[in-house]
Length: 573
Image (cartoon, rainbow, N blue to C red):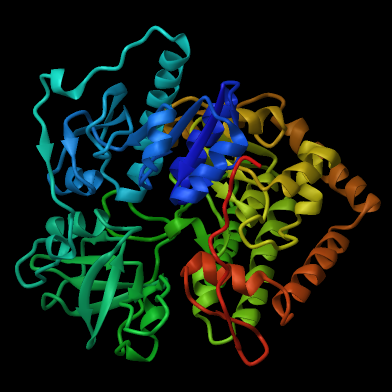
């Protein structure tokens, strides 16, 4: 079936639906951006049999709704109405939620129901929930709705006939998110922070300014006067609550009138000179099981397997993230293990360079280069590990240099809901992280070139067929970590593991004779260097548009203002 996706952004949910529909044999090209004329042009070019619009749903022109079957993917169970369904689910502590696919009508959530799928609500932030359980339910519901539509016999269920009670919820405003540091318990503060971890953040006053707080994690030992800052750790700040403390990894300044939108960065970096003299608390690499505190990198051993888990907000890896993860990997490499598992947590694996940190730097070109070389150092360390097997375990998405980090491992394990973007499409960069070696090594030269040129997301099943993944784990997000532990133990006990490890060094030497890793790195970095430090390259303009739409980009030569590009009409053409 020919299907047109209409999305306000080609975000994680839209990408998941895109890959799932293509995996099931449907023709789905790049999504159309929202806007009446954009949608009309896309419909004329594509002549779709079905139009699918995932949340957040842009409005559709009435003439398109009347002439085509248009299905909205609403991230809420039947009967729940209003613009902020996930926010209310988390605010009210729902155990179960769901996704509903319904016919687009005059009111965005009142059309007839084509499919609905329930899901559990995890003890996680909104973004993680959306990319995990909600995305799984959305994929199942959309495929069911498409199959029902294709049958030509199914009649959607009018909402008026449902016994489900209709609940109309208002928009979830910042006033509902506001934290009362003097009275709110740690549990209450965490619920508010996690309900807005990725977007929009929790607006708060801090050190004389207004900031959006992003992310929240408990702290079990530090305490102090409610609302006061207590310590820092790996870029995060610890802030006292009424009965304890929380860690807040990222901040974004509130936009001032006439100023460009602020960027979300590690809290200590965002505060800069405003930050008082606070103790830097060591980030424990090996965290005792009974601790309830935050660290973004953890190492644990289970017999001959070393598990190096990391979880960075949004998957982005700044220079500091890369350097600390490299130090942790070197530590793991010196332990008496035969297998190292990189990742293994739910949600993002890695999305490569931290474009927000780069955009907020005094010299974005220099920070781009520094971040790139730090990421390359990390990937090279994985590629040159020849005395044990390295597994990359992707519980969620991987993109750009983060995807290449995964492909540098000996084996890549993906959860069935993972999406890979093994290209640099959003910035138009040539790419680095040894992609000219790791991508052809796995997918072949022609397929590697096509992946980079197409700039399209790849689902887990397609990744396995293309050689980008070795195993696909069909499990729920909450089960992924346990499955990885079990599979890694089986791998470590495989009688053939010793022979596989013994083959790694001569294989690396043969590849080195064909073309040294240094040659791959130098060629890639030279192409990237020209983009970073060129006045005319579109990288800086595209980065600014991606990080803060509508803002002016900063070029390396005096940081001259360049108008941000308009939103492109991404249609089936």
